[in-house]
Amino acid sequence: MDTKQIVYGMLTENTGTHFLDSGGSEGRMWQRNAKKTMQDFENESEQSYEFDFKYNEIYRTVSVFHYLTNNLEIDDICEQFNKLQNKNDNWDYDGYFYGVSLEAGNFLNSLKDVGGRGNWNTYNGDSDLSQILQGTTLEIDGEYYFIIQIHGGADARGGYTHAKMFKGGHYCEGMIHEYLREYMDSYEMEDEMEYIETFIDYWDNSITYTNEQVQNRLKETNK
Image (cartoon, rainbow, N blue to C red; front, side, top):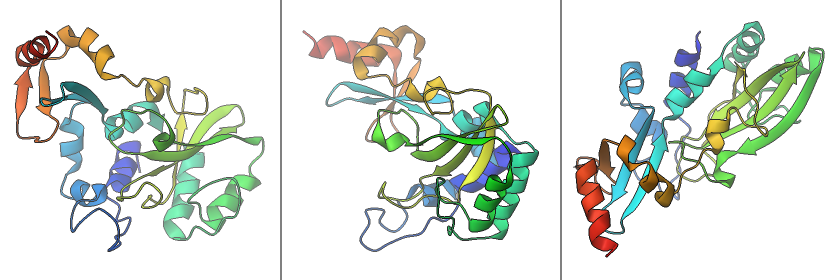
């Protein structure tokens, strides 16, 4: 199974519901994603911009699908790990890795030259990713690997997918790629305005604004 298929499966994986969470009947990310095809994810922009007309704030969203599929790949080690994960639907491994079955965890421990390089959750810092990622960075025989869970639920404390393993060519402070740290606030995006053609309304995705409309609104309110 290639990277796109695995990521698509994770994005649409049922991570459960609870009557006390804030997801409503169909508001959780996995429920919304389940209505999308692989082609829908491939067609979405790698990054998009939203404009809050009331408060004059600009927000950037980086597609988790494109972020992961553009930066990660699957090799033989990943294949073996992911097969064990798919076969053993438990999180019984008691060790360094999150969301991992006992069988997959034991497989990693059987490999030579395996070293942990940090656990992380994008919710704990500024991130423009469209969904929260949680993971562990590993180094195996001098190569970097990432055990990743995607948050598909309502509350960031739960609702994560079964972990999957990927190989990546980048390493930046325990993350997959420096792009993950490339958070942009509204003022920074105003400086990049000339490169942004279209903005989606922050509160209503059916409404869009042109670059000129946003620029005019910002000028009006900055008088």
